[in-house]
View (cartoon, rainbow, N blue to C red):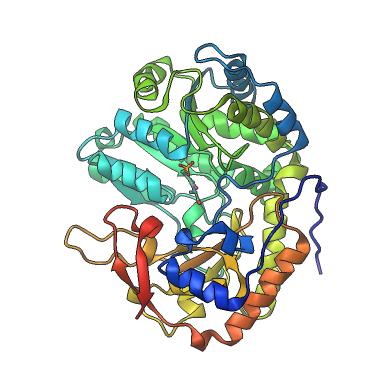
Length: 454
Ligand code: F0G
């Protein structure tokens, strides 16, 4: 057994509750079988997301005490800007309150009616912003990306031939940028290789198209490049980061995942791009030296980005996830392999193969796991999709239950508890029924929608 080791110790704790099963049944009913609507007090292990819930270090806490509060020209902002410059080598930094705010700014700046945005895979908020501005998304993943069981190390890669085809079909003038997402979220936190990114860049250069990196899950991707890509085994995390950054025209990130627990930002070396985007920051986010973030958050990100350069920090998530994935796989539970970053992803299509996609198998599995364990996961399947113009369901490519592993938060015994409960549920999976909407919002319905048993 490969036991992952915590490379930190716990010095501040938060008490947890494990409510009895009767209470859990009541809580999930009241939440409309939507784990987003559960109250945290009814949750034992919150594996909904890794966003905003990663553990902070003593050094981050210390920096937050020293933050320099001011509306304009805060020292804190300068420290963050300098850290971005140092790590990514980008001259211009625009702060924003979180990742989707960056997406709003980028989409408003570059996307117009008829624009086409190629990417390795979409993320929910990214897609929503592009569509809102009249554009459409083309996902150019490789044939390996959607295979649940695979040993392909870089399922987040973009298919270069498809990228060329797309540009030749639609013309470069319709494509304001190519977007690469690090640690590709919706296919199971899967990385792209640096070799693949070099190839994408080559095509972008050939056709004069910008390359935008969504670096929200960069920490995991960095770790996997170092672990899995022969050429980079001897390179430092800092060197790999710089190589990725040098290939990107624009980098944006959610600080809720990268570096800290709040905030976000966009950086670039192009003054022209910076000037174009700048006004949206003051319009939607706040003044240019805070962009909707508090100074404490900015201090935490600056320190967090530095800590991300430490391999013993960024290996924690992937190693605990790999342990969980391997233990479940040994017992035959269908999980996404190879283990990615972000969390352990269970294949609901197979776990509850008696449910059709129109009854939201991944949503049903999320509700069932909560009932049997008090663990809150997140549906990532058809429920997270949007209906088409005619009101028809868009069936997702994958039906996943994501069990996120907030970084440096859970202990190994908690992870073992999760494994034990999932194994029980797998043996009793015939108990799980389907779901249907009783209240279905139009946009990002998975957040607030309420469902009931079919
Ligand atoms: N891009 C990626 C790859 C993300 O995973 C997220 C957020 C965003 C952009 C948007 O950032 O939340 O700060 O506005 N992912 C979260 C999740 C919500 O749970 O996977 P945000």
